[in-house]
Length: 372
Image (tube, rainbow, N blue to C red; front, top):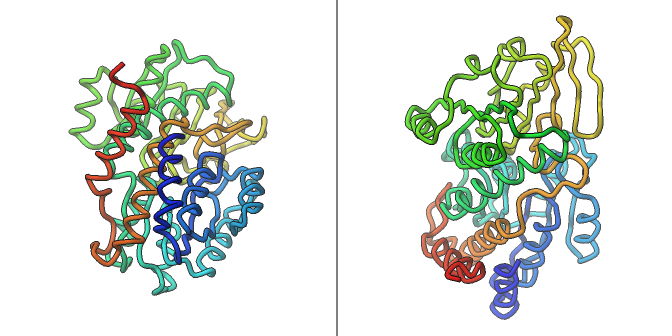
């Protein structure tokens, strides 16, 4: 991760985070550890927890050995995760590195005043900040997912690639000739659809925004409602950031053997509770596969309990090193902006400053040797 390595060298000299405690809720996996090492090189004190279901315990052990305060583990329940979030906030961080706006929500509930600002990693968190938390967060939050650089490099190409890799790794099913329904044609959905089709999958798209649906149609995909595609698809992958996308109305329409998976941040796009309540039998195949049987003889395969599939299963890899080098440099430089200039920024959600996007794009082009 050469971009973060360069930032680390600069931070060791400039120490932009000296005197700041960064509270974090983000997937704890090897690439995240590199980001945290970069921030501590800049003088930050770290208190952190992972996201529910994606924490890698060996990474937690390593970070703790480096003197960081880390809560949680891979086996944590959702209630455990909520307690971990509360533990992070109990340490009174003044800067937040958030994913899903969980920490921002906690601060808004407790009305803590020590936070000067933070960052938000993902679409789901941005939706919360601009929805239920609008006007309730009295400090600036730079939304990394608003960056066109992240949209192209991480969401479209890295998520697209990692979701397809994870589908093959977890299910051991082939892609060519199989019928896939991608629910949501945002940047992540675009990437998932692109990489499935590149490997020979037959791909259809569900999208409620007329303009985006128009784009999907011109990109060559079949476009319809979830009800219209329920009897056609063999694999359904949600990528919207919204809750209840596939629920009790949809499950009876699915074919025998349909596979359900999600790549959105929160495990709420597939209504897993409703799915299980409708089942006559549930069999756990391995740690990322459940076979859900119905009284009518049909069965459905549920991947990773509806959680983010590209950080699930045996040997989860997540997004590529290069894409996370870009995304985490966006994080590091945006957090530097917060640490040094929070008072000059507006309260609430806001995009990554354009100069940061362009600076990183130039660096990445050089690193890639794109002119060769």
